[in-house]
Length: 140
Image (cartoon, rainbow, N blue to C red; front, side, top):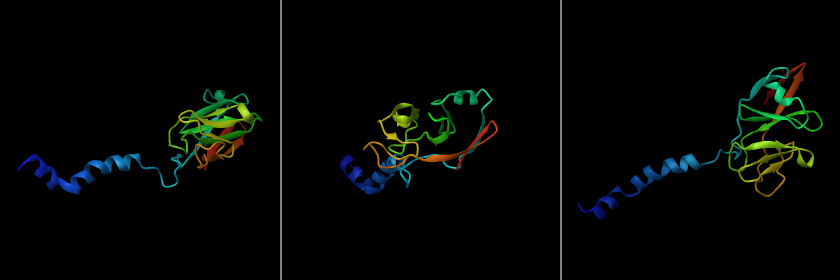
């Protein structure tokens, strides 16, 4: 059998077997956000970990979440995974009253997760927070 005939005999089945893993690996989540799920953790604000949240505008990263003490002194938590192309480069910036910015492609979001520029229409996932004494809880 010649090479051309052999390649023809492989046909669509071989093409599917070669291409499917790539397509599957490149697909987006159904909601397009890629945000972490099942989030429920605490941070002791008196601990070394919590020291990163002492000043307004400070933030820390934990469990794919950006935990922020915003410019008004309130705690906010957002997905570290950008809703644009699911990279983990979302951080908090103190400009414009405090925004979430993805350093991969420049997506920006307000503190409620609403997109601020035309890079994406998908909102950034925001998690709930509660403070009891010095224990900050971040959860869905």
